[in-house]
Length: 106
Image 1 (cartoon, helix red, strand yellow):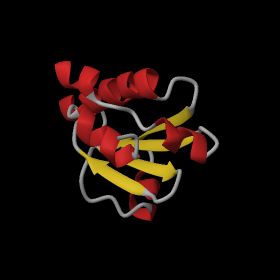
Image 2 (image 1 turned 90 degrees about the horizontal axis):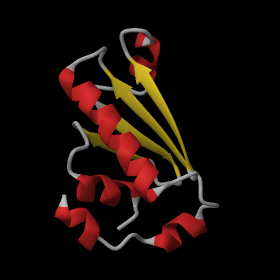
Image 3 (image 1 turned 60 degrees about the vertical axis):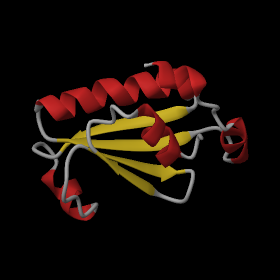
Image 4 (image 1 turned 30 degrees about the horizontal axis):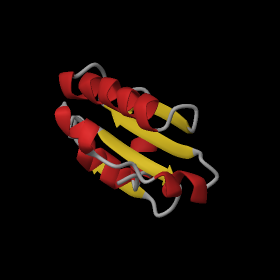
């Protein structure tokens, strides 16, 4: 996408929180949207948060208790746990600019 090249990443956000992002991606088995969300968030993390993130991918079919604990009503769902504030992004994460906004990077 050409829009990725035009975005300015807020490097101050990375420095302010010690540089480590804690992310959880909740998916539903091998659904197409879940598979796409996994690919998209891994690409975004590698490009914008290289070596500065922890990503946990949780399949709610294997861990339904976590879906209840996190009060998940739509999937796929990315939760930014750290740095605060906690944010939730629903969808296949294909809109890089929106994901970066949700992560506080733009």
